[in-house]
Amino acid sequence: MQYLFIAAELSENINKLYLKDSEAEPADYRFQLKCTNCGEDAQKVVTFNAHEKQELAGGKGEASFVMKCKFCESSNSIVASVFEEGLFCQQSENVDITKRKKANLNGNKIDINDWAALLQLDCRGWEITGYEFDQSPFAVELSSGSTMDVQFDEDGTWYDYDDEAGEEVSITDFKFKVIKAK
Ligand SMILES: [Zn+2]
Image 1 (tube, helix red, strand yellow):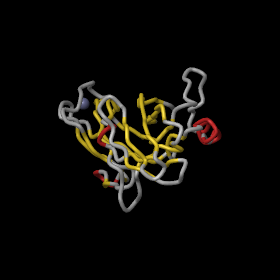
Image 2 (image 1 turned 60 degrees about the vertical axis):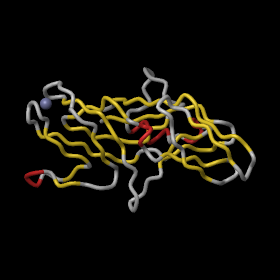
Image 3 (image 1 turned 45 degrees about the vertical axis):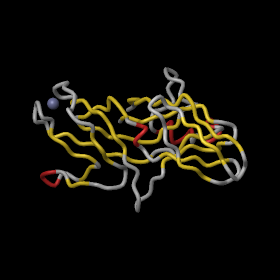
């Protein structure tokens, strides 16, 4: 199982950074992939979400994403599920420790308390090697209760102005990592 984690520096007036994601309007993720069978990179960036599913060939259930490797022709797939709601200003207070323990995400090897595990990825034959986060529909919930859409620059920053509160809003140092767990 792989997990997509995000972290960032949020300005004090941001309560939460999250994806606008629902069954009715699924958030698309754009990923770069590598085939674990032959080790070749998939030649295009792929898009899928955590809500829509496709049938696997031969009645083997369903997956969020299905694509044959062009090089070794292995039939690879990924099942994506929403894991945590978003990145909070007080992230460690908002983490469900029990849920993380069950997913084996609480090892001592990695300090992930300041990170949010957005997505659980059951990858069969694909490994995630890149995530185009600036193409995902991120939004913030402000401490005033209002929300704003976020459009990241490629370097993981976003600056805007909350007209209602008369304050600047910013995110800097956005980063992601994909962690493998059992
Ligand atoms: Zn392959």
